[in-house]
Length: 177
Image (tube, rainbow, N blue to C red; front, side, top):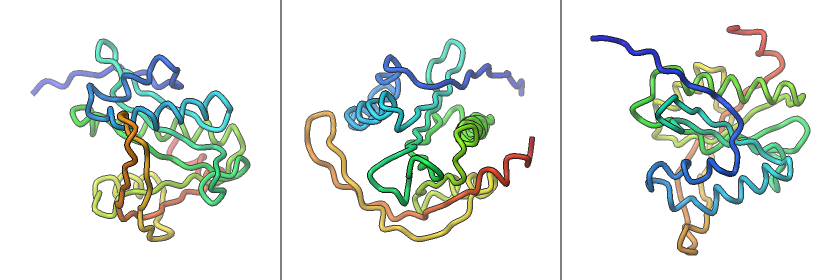
């Protein structure tokens, strides 16, 4: 079997990327959530990172809250919250998620953040293994209750039991490089 090297560029997201984050309609219901996140980007409270493959478009994405209403997640000084992290299925296991995570962690270190945290579904064993391999560890069980307004203006309530995972950044960035 021939292996084809995939050329992927990791870059900050821009407003024009928002439609591509819907992944051909699969995540259309998050349209308002994406717009809200981009509003936070414009205010300096968040960052969107995009993995873009040549001739393929957006193949991965991750959002980082730098400062939010819940200071235990992101306090604007030491702690940032990672969410909306996904790589299109056909591009998984090619190092794209690792590159996205390293890029966002390097950015957080440059901003002097000390901790990165995230929630991962308790039944998402592949993602849990990925985050553990990347140096994150489980610090708490979370009920995973949250809500959003979908693209049709309806409130959607989500219950996805999760693990809160965390990583100390400054001590670990001399690691695998």
